[in-house]
Image (cartoon, rainbow, N blue to C red; front, side, top):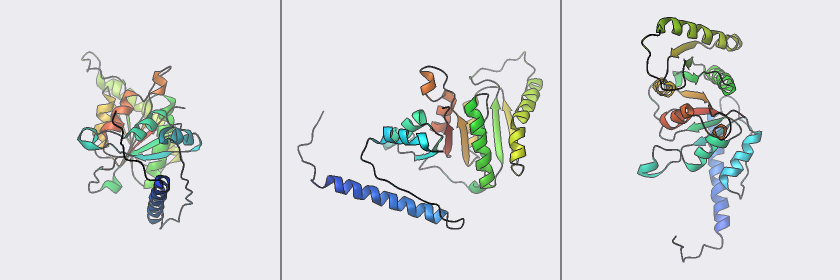
Length: 247
């Protein structure tokens, strides 16, 4: 360990607080600019002197959603999430939206659909609710993707895939029926695949403006972690991703 022999300035605390307030002012200006046509939102702010990760995790207990950027730095970490973002997607008590700083915005991005991964866990139901709400608010279509297996199993030649797929598509339609009644103006495209859920989600994410996935961590220690599919999507997609953790 190397310790610096140069003492910190006596006013380092004031400098840090001033920088924090400047960042908040910049963020507030962005909020006001982006909501000017629809009415300004009420913005409250606070500068806290505390460790960022446990503080933010604690604040998520009372939040509907927390939004974080991707702060991986340097050649090695450029494709990774920062430490704060990683901690929040693993331990937050509310949905976490991860915005990749270098995410490309191809032509037609504003009209691209919202993508949601649908499976059988309770977190998926909340993910579906958020996805429909986001698609409605953005005025775009919704792509609902479901895979029969959450593992990367190879194709089995003795299974009649067309019949299985038809039954799965019907089950998916029934699962989404209540949400489509609530959001009749949202056009839904259903996609059913056999396996490789992360691969298919990342493929569909290339033409989506937002991806919503549920947490598939299960029981005991695994329940504290992000599921493998969600992890692959958060780290692999270039579009914004909302991770819905199961409380």
